[in-house]
Amino acid sequence: MESIRLNLSKSNDDLYMKSKWFGNPDVPEDYPIPDDLCFICQIRCDELAKFDEDNLLPHKGMLYFFGAIDYYFGWLDCYYPESQYWQRDDVKVFYIEDIENQEFKQIVFEDEDGEPLAIAPRSIEFSLDKTDCDGHKLLGMPFDMPWEDWDAPYQGWIELLQVDSDEDDDFRLNFVDFGMMHVLINPDDLKNKDFSKVTATLIYT
Image 1 (cartoon, rainbow, N blue to C red):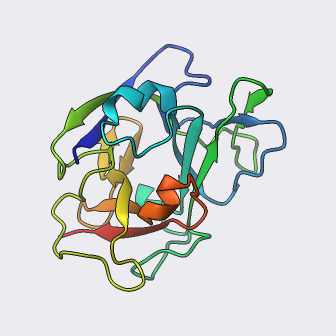
Image 2 (cartoon, rainbow, N blue to C red):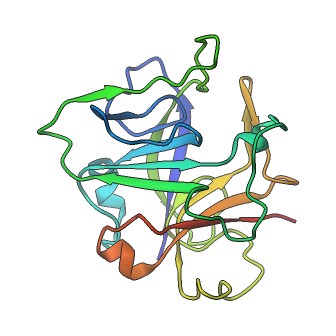
């Protein structure tokens, strides 16, 4: 199984209802997204369908990823998960299948002074890469995984999203000595498009 690499770039284009990394999510009116987790990305599934050669991911709709990663941006007063495998309130994945027949709006996260919190969004272009490549990616095997399988009760779970340590002129994301965050899902849940029970873990040297 190859990985679907997420190639990020700054863009002046309007990324509303498109795949994007950071920025603010575009969701239906009154959709219950978490306000205590960092918005990582939204993935428009029809944009990646041709790269999903094993037909594992949805090929229509939108996937959204949120995680408790503020601490790793250098905001050291923020909560961070201390367990090896994150609890359900620490990482969330949402899937909206119907994005054509309902009204969407962009949710803008602000601080207590009304200033925007989001990092400028990056556009995403998809490409295939080797199964254990580094960088940001969907599917495949985690980069530099030091064991053959996850501990109980997560044996046999697969990688849904890999988030690499990264930096640019407007952010620095460091998962402990430039490690990576891995969002994991039970293969049966993925087949059933059930993203409610994902977990996440960090791998670092």
